[in-house]
Image (cartoon, rainbow, N blue to C red; front, side, top):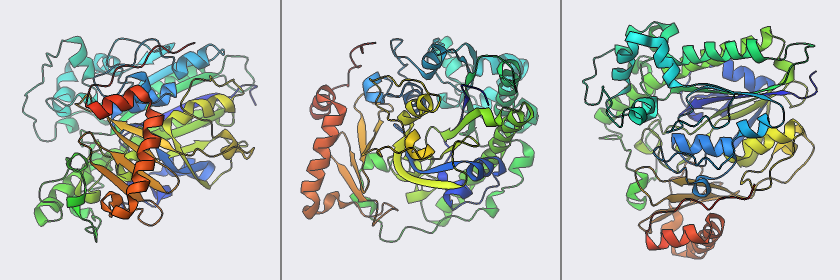
Length: 480
């Protein structure tokens, strides 16, 4: 075994626990590659995103720092250059670093990676077919990879306002879909920079970030055919749920006519395309894992599989992300390293994506920077001990400069919105989040206690801005 292990992060975009067998998901999707990782590794049952939005979630994972501290709070706010990422941390320890796939940087920074392949390179590969993909992404959907176009054309997206032709992505061959391209590029990185058995090469840190199951919900044909809308069984309507007690900001992604025949039909269309995307990205994950096996790198590599956020998938009648419900904020996270991590184990400790960097550093024997928000849970995974995290924090500031926050403790989830509205859920007694206890007069003292703790965690300046409804400033420079 190599003296210093390789580290491979595999990230999906908008992957929900609701479709994964290791998480007892409602929807039954064939995911043999993800299930292999669960059999051979440890599943974290209570992992959360620091933000149910692509850019801040990704950079919270890569920096170990919460969005409200870094200032990267939305898909339009780039990570300030002064913040170090996992690429910097591993590079200075002698690792070759690579980012393959959707980094979604919102600017031209490489953020410390030695090798970087993003959507711009994919567009180069597509050549004349780029327009086919661009139209399939949607007229204004920057989350799908079009930020490259929006950023470098001054917002003059050539496909903005374009009518979408049915079945456009199917015009592309399977090998030309973005995740197929990213899987091949990841394998090329492994072949070029993988240490191999007995070789004296530098170890690698590789971040492979797939687009799917994020929109467009148009997987290659063979995956789409597995999950026609009529085959989708939707979860039953929630019993005892009172949407009148839920702030409007938590319900703004509700499907029209939710839990009516019309709404159910729309939901089946969404879920069917989503499930096809999941099956495709699982196959791409499997290709990367097979390359590890072929190159004899599996036992020398810590693999962490995760998603940046989830998808509501008709939970509470909602779709997409942008909420603090578990379907949106709770994410799959599986760690696998044969001989070092127990196989087939499920852990219930509460963690979030900021914890992945310190955990990875401790796993390879590296010192953890003192100024991270994340905490290593390597002791809980490896059996060497360690205290579980007492809380996790998540922030949402998409299309607004006034963030909303979620505080999750072992039992409680407390959400606070900019209009002063709140949610309180007892996650032990009400894991489906149907009864908003913030309306209960007997719980007001608890709400105040959790709100005070939230302010202390966010920081005095951020709390002041929340109270005065002012934009949240970027954090002050951190000592390095």
